[in-house]
Image (cartoon, rainbow, N blue to C red; front, side, top):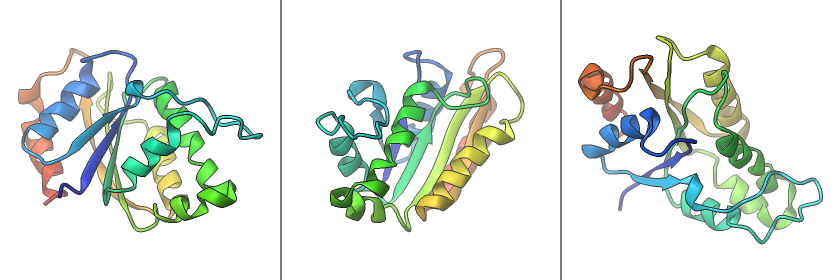
Length: 169
């Protein structure tokens, strides 16, 4: 069974991050979950949102050992939908009936795939993921980034893609 899933979010279908993720997926056995295919609401201190798609999505994600979080860099941060998804993970840490699901994140390896209009990924972007992974007891496996200031051209990233693939063998 495939042991890697990518949780993907972007405001633009077939945008640079999706192209980068699909280039990676061509020669790597991964499943891709597009957050736009799910309906879930933001974190709610009163937990009135328990009947949305969040928990089925989490249960699907928890069946994998390696989890890639893929998002373009928007103003030094993830997309609003990815942020909403990450915020909702708090449900797994606070609701007594979901604590076991939250514990299942421990020991999994997490990665980041992103694109931006810069040569480097902003530290704040990667650190937000690293800190989240550490807090959840997950291992940080690394990241793949594409500078798409002039669009995404796969031939510019062959070495990066191959180097990232090594982490999944």
